[in-house]
Image (cartoon, rainbow, N blue to C red; front, side):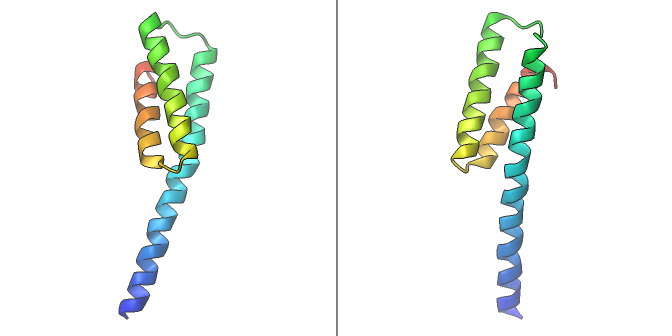
Length: 81
């Protein structure tokens, strides 16, 4: 019973990483779409959003999906999405 539990736990933890990985591109697209609509942002906020978006993509590519989600979430908050 114990080995089966360990296998199940490993599968579930792997699945959560895949779920996070797939939401990063959707969040990046939402940010890109909002930026394309030329939102009313100050220069400092616009620069911060672009940096957070770039950081989020880099972290996603590095496999650090939780950190990517955090950076992209901050960018979305500034954009109001």
